[in-house]
Image (cartoon, rainbow, N blue to C red; front, side, top):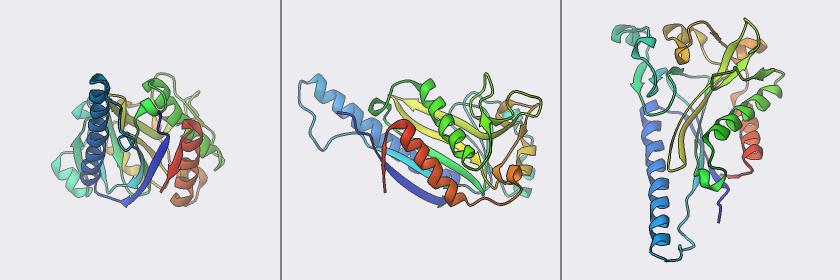
Length: 240
């Protein structure tokens, strides 16, 4: 039986490595539960009612950090150790897909840790659905966004020379369990993107909701709206 209930966590401003470790623990617990259920099925046993995978949606912000995905190139970070120190930033190569990106205060980071067997087993559809949730959220603030052909994430003016990325995405999926996720620039200091080739794309700009609207945006309001759109599009019940 599919479990479409999703536990919501708001971790606030949290160190990237601490959040990564907490994600890994939840991810491992979910995968181990799936393996236990599969082993019982193979043995011809009925799965116990209290053994089922749980789904999680985590929202947070991070202090200044640059992360490099498995398919990324280290040279897309344009700072050395001294430069990172001067920017009060840290750097981590990690196990998600995608290239290099930046996280920092004022950016809403979303980490869905979902067992896609509870929803749909299609990673392409999973990414497009996350994008759609962000596009719908931005629309409620009067920001028209869309997709840029050939790239993951959410873009403004994707069909002309003024295209700029407002939300980056990079996920890991194993046994149809997801981790990592999306980073939506709300009140983000865009100067930090000048120190990288964002997502390996050197000819496109980066945007934020604050920059587009000309005013600071209530990030708690963005969380509430994005959570609602994720819930509707995935047909999930968010609790907590």
